[in-house]
Length: 293
Ligand SMILES: [Fe+2]
Image (cartoon, rainbow, N blue to C red; front, side, top):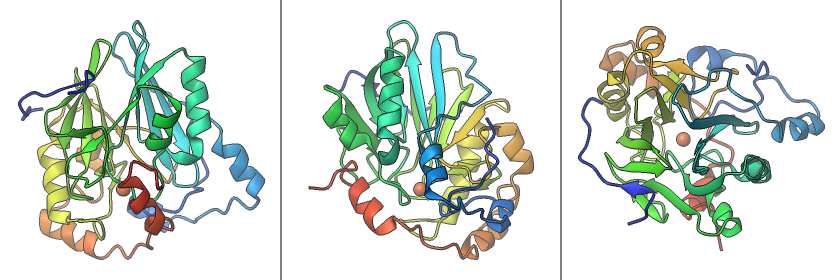
């Protein structure tokens, strides 16, 4: 077993962007669905934005933890970099192919040793850079849920711990958007990375890739909403420029998850979202860690 990962028994308790540049294809809030899609107009704007770094104003409170929230414009994906400030061991969550150079140069600038590239699930809207990163960083491992159907060095299960230096994230299985969706929870439960299970005032869509609104509702209520009220939640996407939320906020204000199950299912079954543009290339590529021969 890889040294960055240990298995434990399941734990049962467990720069605001103003432009909406990416298509809302993973299922966000009503407001985002209805909001006007702003066209970047010129490719140069997208090119400029693509390599920009957007740092979240709210940093993790955990001592000795380096944390960065990075944004990829085309798919509105957040990538997260976490590291131990003493040992410099680092992990990256949901890295995107288009921003691999930006991410690797930041890692180099900060003097970090990247040991793991982990995906919250098999993405449909973008290609992961984890496979290409493995080619560029000696010894780097990849990880994803064992239920994702994707290949990786480490297949994650409920309760696994992803270790970097003195820190770790606990793997919580939160299926529903896909079978292999996972949420990663910090050791002190001050922050969690929810992938596409829970988005800010929204949630991941359930109309493809083994999607099931019933399972998603259960995952969110029985896993994510059981975390402490002030636990910071970091999603895999946002289409409105929001960067972070909390368990308490979503329990109170999420327009879908505050509904009863039956109503939630009805909402999810009637979203009528367009298919993600890249789904036909992204899913096959992501099943192979982002690499296709
Ligand atoms: Fe997704």
